[in-house]
Image 1 (tube, one colour):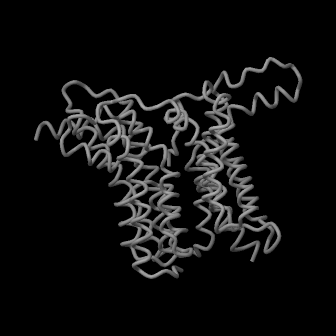
Image 2 (spheres, rainbow over the protein chains, first blue to last red):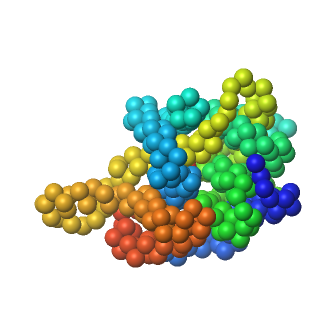
Image 3 (cartoon, rainbow over the protein chains, first blue to last red):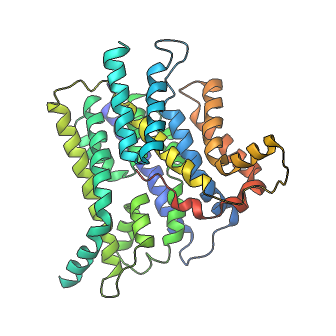
Length: 112
Length: 263
């Protein structure tokens, strides 16, 4: 459950929206006449998208502790499920649905 | 009217595959928000003003943690940094569209970028309206998914404990898809060594961006803990990429722009 006040929630959403909109509108503000962007910018544009996905994976798993609770075993099993489903079907829908259902079954029925 | 109708008819077919994905992921997002006790106005408002799938999921976590709007702002910029590069490639296509231009920028995501930048629009179809309909259709699929998922959360006959794993599952499957894309990339590194270790290192180079994205944040997580690792991780990743630039630049170029999250 949310512990922040409604106004703090609104401010958080507004901050996320501002940051997101900055990424969308900045190029059009900086390069109104299709001026070529500097090479460093182009380079970071090539490498950042894949790196950010890795960061998001770590972020989504940040509260999993290998030293307490179930030592991250449900998460590890669900991750393995996703990797195997991915290699089998190469479908994001199948991988996400399969991994999430596996995790829900584990934490509701096995690791309780 | 005929102008709008032909543009809509051209825009609908390429967005249909996206409809399936958005109903599923928007539904998961609505379901997650319901499970975490949020009123339906929250996911809908977030969908409206953010409209970036990964960041909306991340914002659920932000709302459930301590109040820190500055970190939320920085995180949104880093997570959505790829938009900068979509924007750079759409500078020409969005030019001269009047009020439709800010709408197209406001609604730009991986999927609309993929369609707008790649689909061949017949000369009889107005390109500006075509892109407006692509955006509007993608948004309606996303909102539809949110509403269905949130409503389903109230009537589902089963326990939704563990649904929050959908976040990790989504990011991991995006990562796996990008990993396959990386493998198909050629020409990384210039080493001619024949040793097994050097071969292994060479085969890892195409994955360097993904590896930096996994290892740097993981190390920062261990050093700084789950509540304050994100900003040092992002700073160190930028530093790492600037240091590795000479090695990575030729291998990457602009094709990374195409391989966004794909929701």
